[in-house]
Image (cartoon, rainbow, N blue to C red; front, side, top):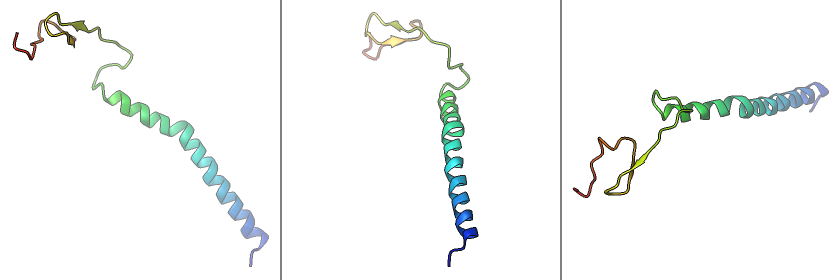
Length: 74
């Protein structure tokens, strides 16, 4: 029924799947998540920050006050 050779191959196959999954989770999967996050910036470097200014009329924070138009119509 079960020969020692079959048992050894089953153990080796289980070990390969286990270590392959462990390698994938530690090296490949985090890089995939990082690439998705960086794609959200569309050409901007993710390490640069943008200072926002508060609009004195409506109180919202915007990147450029000269191009901001308040929704309240002021």
